[in-house]
Image 1 (cartoon, one colour):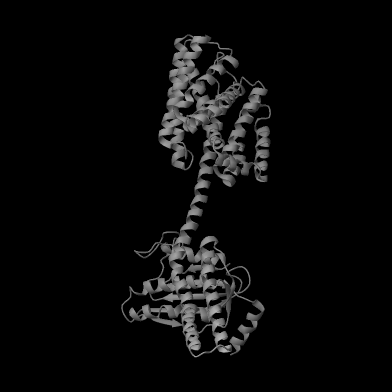
Image 2 (cartoon, helix red, strand yellow; image 1 turned 180 degrees about the horizontal axis):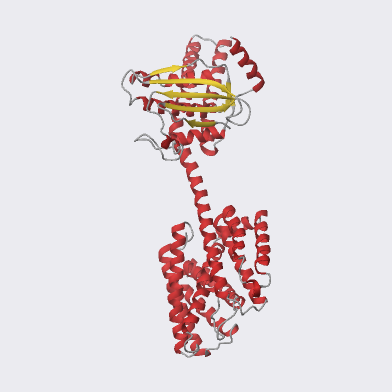
Length: 540
């Protein structure tokens, strides 16, 4: 016996019991004492079982259908017809399960909008075809009065379709350990209690006495559904719409409100559920895209940070090599005093410096962590400019660096170097389209008041180039992922740069002009000291 067969055998009795319980609880306003009701969530339970176990779920499902006819309705069709009709329902529902399993397998039914719409289409068409055949069989046996075939087809079809659409997502989530864990996490949140309480209040206000409500204010039920969908995605929505359906069904059953248009009410609830599911899946997709984008940005940052890593490690590695040769020379001379000790200490310091660089880059890739420290503007621009010296000379580009104010930014030096390196690299690419003698890049800095960042003073660095500049159309999309003005560009460099700037409490933007202008602004370090430094700089 396989593991799945063993699992099914353990679940057979709970499945049958739960199926009959669903049948009893939703046996509301039936036609002719048959299982023709406006809401049938029990097939949703069977379809989930079919998706998990295939045709092995057929026998437990058939037994559950027969027991429901015996225990809930008193077997109005007699034993023989009950067994045959239940067998057809098992086959009909099973065919829907086969189509679902072929399209979705045993996982991922509600992973995207496309899958959701495909599921809705399969369920709607499948329940309709199953409904037509089943009602035709009932008519042939004389259990349905002549001339009532269309009415019972409408009632039973709506009941099955609404029951599956509203209930199956939640049952599907409860069928897996991961789904149950996510639902537990959602249920124990305070906001879940909030929107469930809102649902109860809205149900009371909308229906009051359900027989006289006429569904005039049904649209208020969208409030808790939209709340759940926008905050908790599909999982919160599935819980919410199922609770609303239970509430509506309970009101009808307990008030014995058999004269209202229950099918109309159920269709409204189905539309409510589909709108909620659509919003919930969009929210889940956006969150997943956000997570994927963050991961993509970190992977893109690996390439961008390689240059920073090479530059940062070059100095300590060069120093280590020099100190190592010095130690070798001192040992050969027989030196064992302070000079050798001092050289070894310097080697250890440089080794620690290199390890710190690697650690900070590793932390950035894993968590985006930053090590904030004062970064001198002049030193920052000088270090990055030197890295472009060979490229600038090779392409005949003139780099002009304006006099830098003696100010320091509060930033992670490695990450801010990456941003400035991106801007200079983009400027270098832009000016290469210009003829020789007209390729110029200028870097300048100035202090700004609090208007740009909304807090404290900041230092603004500007990178200008003699390229064609940023058009108004491109400016609106320039910082979107995978948007690039370069044929070979991935469109992630500026996205990454802006993300780094915003993580520092700064900003990065481009200006629409006849030539390239990019500006980056960061908060100043040690505001009180910088105030005095700026005054001294202006006075000089």
